[in-house]
Image 1 (spheres, helix red, strand yellow):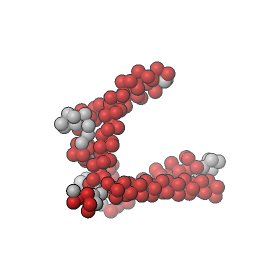
Image 2 (cartoon, one colour; image 1 turned 135 degrees about the vertical axis):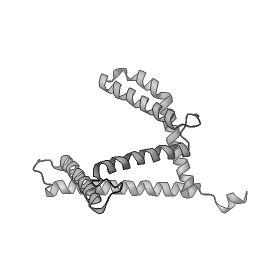
Image 3 (tube, one colour; image 1 turned 180 degrees about the vertical axis):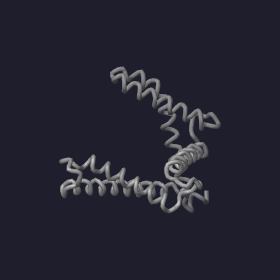
Image 4 (spheres, helix red, strand yellow; image 1 turned 90 degrees about the vertical axis):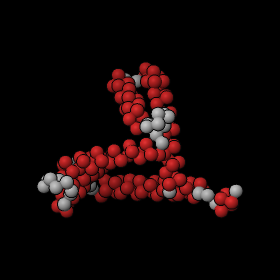
Length: 169
């Protein structure tokens, strides 16, 4: 798993550097974009550069596994702090069962609203059988895609794993 994580990190880092190196060219090539799209591209390029500047401790232009782990830990801490701020009603620094239930209910309500927005074609506030079937088909499609992705990752990890013959060399 650690080997796979290293490969994933390397790929992400390469893509980040490629984005960093090509960002000015992409912005220059965006002359046909609307002014709003140009601003979005510029913001994204600045965000990528700021991320690299903040987390690239060895200044090699790539987020190494440890640097990426630091970035991910910071993002998780920020998310956790936001959840605590919003749902820790008694201020004890932890989510009690009733606070967890509230957070989960809010997440479910947000999900249900998104499903209705996407699939409730007649806007009656309920998924009719054909709308529910379209939602279920999408759920199954997404599940199949996740499973295929996981299977591919496992196959890549298995093929990259050292074999007894390669260890003997």
